[in-house]
Image (cartoon, rainbow, N blue to C red; front, side, top):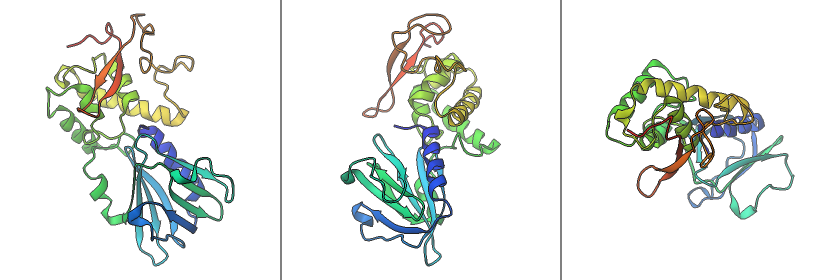
Amino acid sequence: MPEGDAVRRTADRLDRALAGQVLTGSDLRVPQLATTDLTGATVVRTATHGKHLLTRLVAADGTPLTLHTHLKMEGSWRVIVPGARWPGPAPDARVVLRSARAEAIGFLLGLVELLPTAEEPSVVGHLGPDLLGPWTADDEAIALGRLTAAPDRVLGTALLDQTVVAGIGTIWLSEVCFVQGVHPQSPVAAVTDPLRLLRRARPMLRAALEHGRPLTTGDRRNPVWVYRRQRQPCLRCRTTIETGPVGAPGRQRTTYWCPRCQPAA
């Protein structure tokens, strides 16, 4: 599943194509919206909250609307010039937005819904603060409180929980735990400075957003410390990287760690 920085890049791509444009056509290929026509709507921008995309429009009658989409595991948004060949199978398209300048197609989107913009909190209000958002002192306090509320919870599971903090997936879970020196399968209580952990995660996502890919080590040849480096030597101590599961039952994900740099609690 794409992580917060990848979703933000998708939103930026949609903005470059559609922001400020009037839609000349639309096709919402989900049953509940099959008869909805957004022709004449003006696209304002596509915002994000964690892994959620919020494409804000003003309908032809002046009503502010939000097209809420989520990529889940397989989804993607692709942008082409009008009339160009689609970069994916037509049956996989869930949303098509057309303007005079561009055509945006959402393939295999895991979630598609249209709602009044004023009701956005009903679909993202339960999420934790967005690591790529403004990140105020209040955001930091909320994220810290939610992370430490269950000290016996597995750290990796807590960090993947988007209601704690939004935007972390398996890449940033693995990388921030390595930099913090804590085992991802340890309890939250094992983190001696959880606020520092959160503060380290934010610049990681921002750097990836800037560079277009993870770059936690600062070395383009070896851009990540542990993610997907199982059975390879740790870049810091040469111990073999290990891997294992974290996450809620039925939704487990794979994480990576160095057993020497991140001893189990």
